[in-house]
Image (cartoon, rainbow, N blue to C red):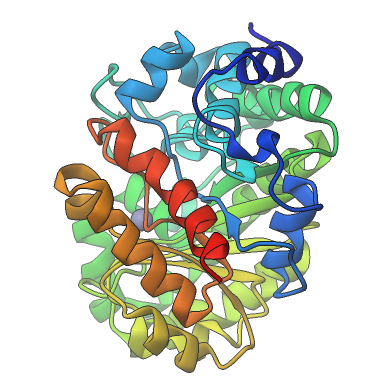
Length: 361
Ligand SMILES: [Zn+2]
């Protein structure tokens, strides 16, 4: 594994990326990220992401690739560091995929390859009584590896760069374990079954989350696929809002809620969950998002990944970054996991645009 110290040397010798080491601002990346997360004072707007920023070009740069980086804690830690050392972000996020939580639950998993993210191959559960957390859950490979990677990152980065772990909430975990279609039908026909499933899965979520915090995560991405297209605002309020509040109280670190799609209609509800930050999609106008949460929760993300980062130019990225900065978005970054084939120039442009914005101020 190439250590953080060796990366710093490489960068000081003219390697591209990690502009922060060339000295903009007085805060450490972690101070900046954590302050921005809580909506506090910063020396410059924070740059970061709760979801994966790893692309094939970033993998090539580091010399570590998927799928090995999902299942080897040293490789996972080294690739995660690239968010900071290559892309100049203020945080790193070692859980690149969406299936670590489920992989510890007797479900078969396809760990993908360098151009494909992992996915679960089946949805084995049908009844509430099927929900069981194996006694050795935290020791199972897909669960243990990210916990170990966080421990390695904590040792490598100390307090310099923020470490963001990741869990999927009971809604997402239910999609994996019971299947999206069945689960969504039950929300209409058997709402009590859905409530029992969410409550049963909550224990697994809290266990994995607190193990990551204990290993050294400063904050956690909390993903729940209550997306604008599939789940209405009313469903979010009926099934998830209070559960999100309860989960927040049981996890010993700030949570960054991540939900894809257009979530503008439920942002005022999300702002009441006591989550620390909301990582939101590019389909929501950043100024409208700011108005909807009314200062109750910080905002992160918004730079479009499916079109702008994947097929746009650096100039397109800059336009979106400036729009998010004008709106006062606290942490600037991709709206969701970046497409694996997104060009490096576009990924680097996020941090460069933030620096250019401050220079022009
Ligand atoms: Zn997403």
